[in-house]
Image 1 (cartoon, helix red, strand yellow):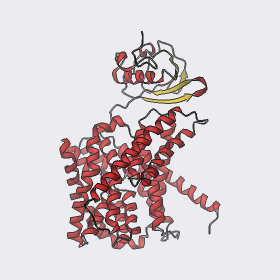
Image 2 (cartoon, helix red, strand yellow):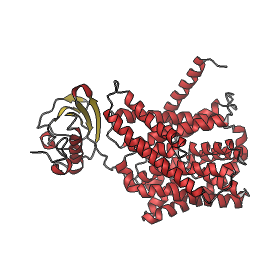
Image 3 (cartoon, rainbow, N blue to C red):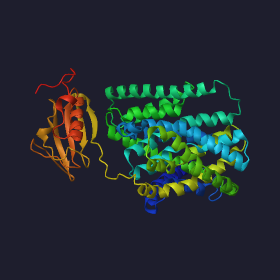
Image 4 (cartoon, rainbow, N blue to C red):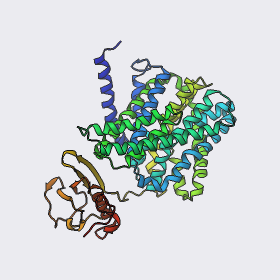
Amino acid sequence: MAGLEVLLGVVAAVVLIGVLAVRVSVRLGLPSLLLYLGIGVVLGESVLGLQFSDALLTENLGIAALVLILVEGGLTTRWDVVRPSLGVGIALSTVAVVVSIGVVGVSLHLILGLDWRVAFLWGAVLSSTDAAAVFSVLRSVGVSRRLAGALELESGFNDAPVVLAVVLLASGDPFHWWTPAVVVYELAAGGVIGIALGLAGAWALRRAALPSTGLYPLATMSVCVLGFACGQFAHASGLLATYVCALVLGNSRLPHRGGVLSFAEGTGWLAQIGLFVLLGLYVSPLRLGDAVVPALISGAVLLVLARPLSVVAAALPFRVPWREQAFLSWSGLRGAVPIVLALITLVEGAPTGSQLVDVVFVLVVVLTLLQGTTLPWVASRLRVVQSTEMTDVEVDAAPLDELGADLLQVRVPVGSKLRGVYLRELRLPKGATVSLVVRDGVAFTPDLETRLRERDQLLVVTTAEARRATEDRIRAVDSGGRFARWLAVTREPGTGEPPVR
C-alpha cells in the first residue's frame, strides 16, 4: 500500500495538472472537464494500472462533489440576474425533465428494445443538465441575462427531481397513488429548509465577530453543506436544500463577501477536478466499445427529439422567442451528473446498471465535445450574445468589530453611471466617507472634487449603523446616476426615516 507521502504527492500533482488544464482547454477550445476525465483514464487500470472499482464509494464521493459544485453555483448566482428567468428556469427543471424522460424512454424502448421501466430509467439518468458543465462553459459565452439565468437555475434545480426519479425507477418498487405526493413533499421541504438555513446563516454571519477573515468562507460553506444534511435527515431533497441555501446566502449582505465567493469558486473547481478524475478512474476503457452504438442512439434521441421538445413544453407559456428556445435546446450540457446518476442505478441493483454507466460515459464525452465546443458559435449565429451588457457595481464589506465600523470595497464596473460622478455628488450618509481611491494601480486620498472613473476601486469607511444606507446610496447612483432619488433609497440609521439634509 502506498505511503502517505505518495498519496499526497499524487493528489497534489493531479490538482496542479487540473489547474493547468483550464489554461490548455482555453487555448484548444475544449471543455476542461474532458481533460479531467482523460487524467482519470490515464491513471486507471488500462494505462498506469491504478485499480479502482468501488461503485458505492464513487457514488458517495460524486454526490459530495456535486454538493460543493451546487454551493459554488448558488453563492455566485446573482438573484437580480436570474429573477426575470425564474419561471422559465423552474419549468426547465420540472416540466422539461418529465417530457425528456418520457420522450427518451419511449424512443429507447422502441429502438433498443429496452423494458419500459429500464427505458424510462435511462431517460431519467440522461435528463439532468450538469451544473459544473453549465457554470464553467456558459458564463464565458456572454449570452443575455435571461438565457444565462434560465440555464443556471435549470442546472441548479433539476438535479433534485432527477435524483428522485432515478431512485424511484431504479429501486424496482411498485408505484402507488401517493408517490407523486411524496415527490412534491421532498422538493417543497428541501426548498423550505434551504431558505430557512440561508436566512438564518446570513443573519448569524452578519452578527458574528469571528477572529479571522478566513473563517467566514468556511462558515458560509458549512451552512450550505448543512442544508444537504438537514434535507436528507428530513427525507427531503438535500441537493435542492443545498442550492437554495447557497442562493439565499450568496444574495445576502455577507461580511467579507469577496473572500467568500473566491473561496467557494476555488472549492468548486477542486470538486470538479476531483469528480471528473474519479469518474475517469472508475470507468474501464476496455468495456466502452460495446457502449458506443447505444450511446450514439441515445445522444441522437436526446439532441434531436427530447431536448427540443422539452424546451418547447417548458418555454411556451413564457413566450420565449424561437432563437432563445433554439439556444436553450443546444445548451443542455451533460457532464458528471448523469454518470453519478448511472452509478446510483448500479448500486441499487437495477437491470443494465453496468451497461448504463458505460453508455453514459461515452455519451457525456461525445456531447461535451459536440455542444461545449460549438456553443459560442451557436450563440453567435442565433444572435443571443450580449457581450457589452453592463455589470452591476460590486460592494464588498468587512466588519471592523473593535471600532464599531465597516469597511466597504467598491469596484466601479464598465458602463456604470458612477462614472463621472464627483465624490460630493455621492452624498453619502452621515458617518460614511471615501477614504481611498485606487486607479490604474495607484492609490491616493481623494477629496470632494475627485471624479470617479470606470474600474476605480474605492475604500469607504462607515459606521455600522450607516452601512446599509451607504450601500443603498452607492447602488442607487450606480443604476440611476448622480440624480438618483436620495429619499427613495436611504434612511436615517435605525429609524427607517429619510435623512435630514
